Amino acid sequence: MSESLEIMIQLLIPLALVLLGLLVGSYLERRHYVSIREREEATRHTPVVNLRKIQHEQPIHKSYLVTGSAVISVDYFKRLLAALRNIFGGRVVAYESLVDRARREAILRMKAKCPAANIIINLKIETSTISKQGRSGERSVGCVEAIAYGTAIHYQPWEQAG
Amino acid sequence: MIITNVENVPGKVIAEHYGLVSGSTVRAKHLGRDFMAGLKNIVGGELKGYTELLAESRAESVERMKTQARALGANAIINIRFSTSSVAQGASELYAYGTAVKLEDSNE
Image (cartoon, rainbow over all chains, first blue to last red; front, side):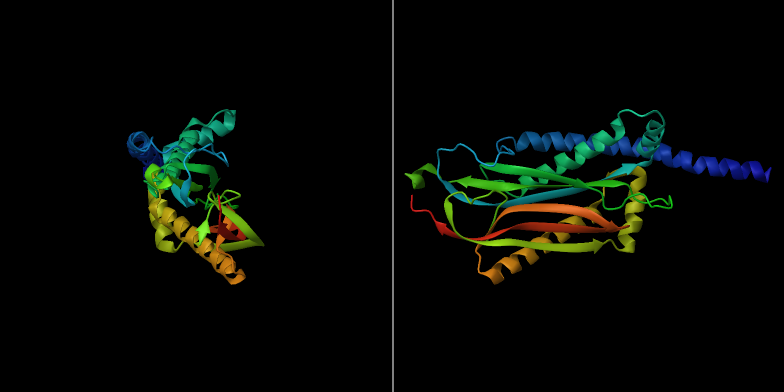
């Protein structure tokens, strides 16, 4: 009797964590995507390009480095999905959205640093992880961090330029 | 000090090159943050503590690079790149490097 109870508990706790990850995780992700789309729409007037030089007619007033970063964590459900995927191989959709969120969030934060800029050029995105899975297989925090950086450019207003 | 990640500073001309300057920091998260991140890891989402850590160490490495450039007599750093790597479990290195230059206003 006590043995079966022990097995039940051992099975139930991971199951509860996975369920929690599925429910709360997907809710958080949906909310995050809504906020990302809203802010992308709001900052559409500032183009971000990864060109080093741009064609421009107005003289440039000033330019400076802007950066933005975000660290996004996986949830237990996604981890389970990815572990299952590891058996058969193929696209890990659960992790694709994770990296996508981190990068878009980083770009948005970078844009938020220079709301008055006309354009951001030479965008570079750096992606890495702070902590990897331990060698001995111990649990560690699975997350991706994205850094976006570029050069913000302000054009000189026409009146001053003339 | 002007910092950009393009090869030139728009609107200015480069008068002198001083060569490569760089700065780096290795940061580890403290236990409290690790614990909170562990909890957040169940449901996913943003790890604010880690984002903060990342931003702090980026600012620190840029600051070190600037100090180096100032010592050389430069007034700008161009073509900056960032690179991150995990040195050990739970510690990450943030490395920033660029070219220190002296700028002058273009006469055009």
